[in-house]
Length: 113
Image 1 (tube, rainbow, N blue to C red):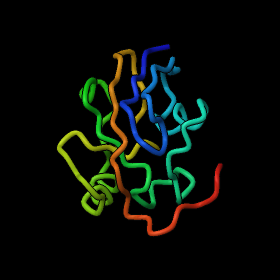
Image 2: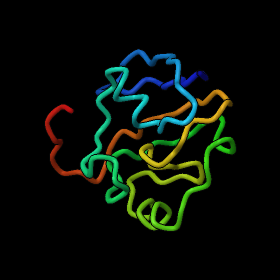
Image 3: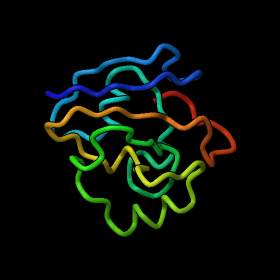
Image 4: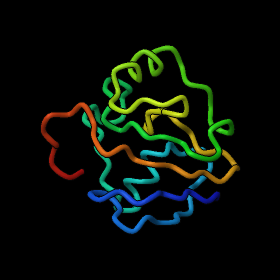
């Protein structure tokens, strides 16, 4: 287990939170399994950008993004050099600090998981 710090987000996690994240799980899985209902319109199949996060600390410990993820990220709102699709970013042993962007490209939000 490693530490995953989620910075405050008005809709998903207003106060921020510190989570225990199993090594080998995606950031998206960790968030969803802990009640943080981040958007994931493609059901974590790397076909959209709704689960986009910015990794503020620990980025280099994550698995390298594949070409498809990089291509999709080009369409994400608020893209930064440390942006990842949370469904593709696999937790390693290094603690992470993530920020969920204020907006996504999703015009309507899907129902809860």
